[in-house]
Length: 408
Image 1: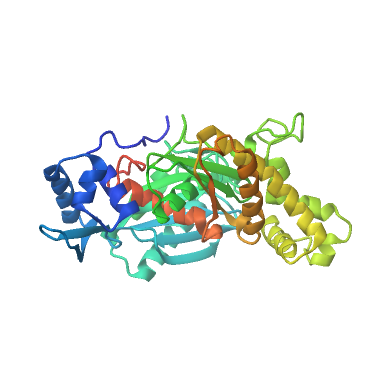
Image 2: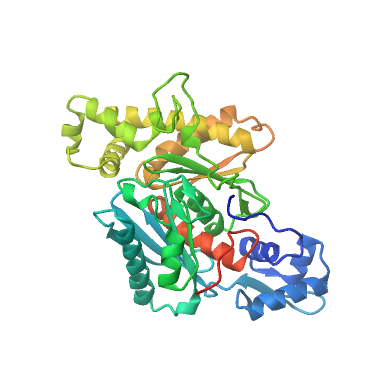
């Protein structure tokens, strides 16, 4: 079964009020009454509990009215901190954010070379302690940690089914292995799911919007937030846009299908195509030993600076990904789409421009509403930031985010 996570059951829930303050703040109690239809005493009781718990605070500012001045409410950015670690092919990126999604610390380290389960768990635990101690965070102020990486994931058992370059880590129950070591709740999730929640949380997007995220790293994924909660599917593996066939009887894919979007638009595919073009990699100074991530950054930078061959490859990728964006928009009728992930870090503008154009021309509901398309403010760290957001959402807005286990 998927991790339990759904929109709040009723309008008086803590999650709903937290979400309204998060996305609308500063906001007054009267405005919360108008937004929810609840009575003033009900809102006052919920807000009082949130203030007592330190999740919400009064700003000190007031709005003048004919009656008593209205105190304004905001999320207390220091209520709790979340830790997210993104597991890459060769690196681990750790990010700590405050309750409102602001980054307060970041550290990038090399991943264990041997890839053994015990080595991975030990390095993750060490990294957690190094970063939180370095920031001087009291242990009780950390809501938990999320470890995110390429899917598929088994969120119930807290492990990845496969990780790039770490065959031995697939059977490791990270949640069990790390919770006891760290004394805080530990989640395991996919990078695309985490990035989606991170962008939704950090951008203070209203729960009334149908929010989508396209995530591109070594592969391509997506996520959709409905009524403030991430849509997960039966096993928390929803949104694998990269494995939607777009070419009939096309290139075989490791997922078992053919013609998948990833086989035509993913960075590793473009790097392979660039290496096949005579003289291109030598001219761009892409070395044989360079990994796909570095080689793609060089290729994307060349495209931005006007290299015609590099730009042609990026344009083809953007056109294919735009087809995926139209599919995502038509399936969910989304009104906001953000591009996140290292694949967009250098040449994100090329992808944003093409996706905006294609949605304006082909989105099914284009005559009813526009689809806003933006680039993440931090594409490269979006998954790690999103991991921290998963923890915080589950901590301060339970019902919208994943359930967190009790502290050890």
